[in-house]
Image 1 (cartoon, rainbow, N blue to C red):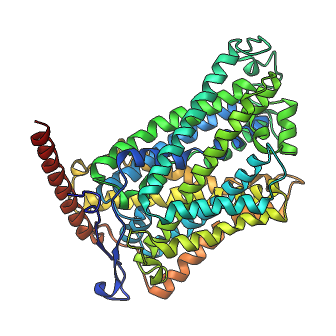
Image 2: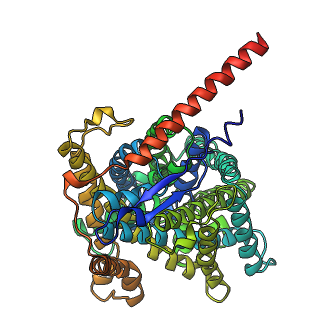
Image 3: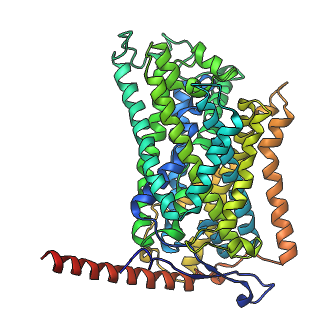
Length: 546
């Protein structure tokens, strides 16, 4: 029996809302469950590690110093672990397409589900041209002869091919691309250790010299914009803002839930892997950058004011150049390109699935639910590609400026998305309690709940308002920075009110919440059938082999 062909689960997607009867709002989820555990694991890594970890992580080192950089990443990692706990508990029990968007719709208010979907799609869709722009920058590390438009077009075609010709190719591509990211990350961590103990052409055992205030005045906590404690706090805040943009991951794992094989077994294990990824990649990354370079390094300062082509703006490459290492910068540049391509591929996949989930719930036009015979939401892929064409802005504008635009547009949407997830979880938690459903019966139970959720909710509410704080400093007003930092904060409440007025939705009481009973029953049947088929296959193999 071909288990892969039998892994399709058609699920009715019912919309909760008073304006229409339930039967009038039914669509079918026609995606296939073909993503194995190894695919989910590497997709999570693919969405986690990108340009910001290898290049942009050094941009705030001059603002806060190595101490503030490390503490900021440590602190925001705890917030992300709390988000992971909440998301894993809901998604592992109800593994459906575009889960946390539809959870907001079903557990809170359909108007919130609509806002969550639009916000998350904008976040992902803008990150695609961001990664393409960064990829183009990497190519020019070696040559300026290839036209920018050609590079953008080639990358876009690759993304479309990987996302159209069956999801199994996406899973396989992410599996191999993520291996390159792992090699790059651990290679850079090893490079940091070897060079700090003297394994470099200069034979300089610098160790933690850049943390020593007697060797590097002002380290490890640097004053920024002001002097004294206020300046050190602003330096930490600048590092924290960068950390809130860089650190991510659980939302990308959750977006694969509707296409995950035996999801209630594979998803809890994959979410647990997020703990190790946060600790290994982000915290060690922040530590490594603070070890390799002093915050006052002139080459790093120049990279900030006038970004060099390619990985020349990476703190790791700057450190290699400072130590007169000739070959490694080219290797790092190639692997960073692989990392960027993989991250953009993950964003492309999740953007299309976000649109698909919203269309299933009649939040977007129904033609977006059209799938190919291989289960690919083809029109959603097309819309995502159209948004990705924003990458062509760099043809007529400076690359660095375009990157700045995209970062500003996405940072607020990312943190707001986490706030939506946490608020939805709190409604989920109290609905379970009100309806007498024990959390011990769930496939994954997050620790320290609901206190963990309140902790994350508090900081994900505060951060969006702090992102553009610099414009409020004396003589530092910048209209563009204000616009890109705060526009989404004003747009989302407007969309929420419009949806509520047009569709007359209301906040659901905990006793009214439903937990996708029909979808869960179909997934139960699928998993039972899958296990039964695998048992028969194992018995056949045993009989044949003897």
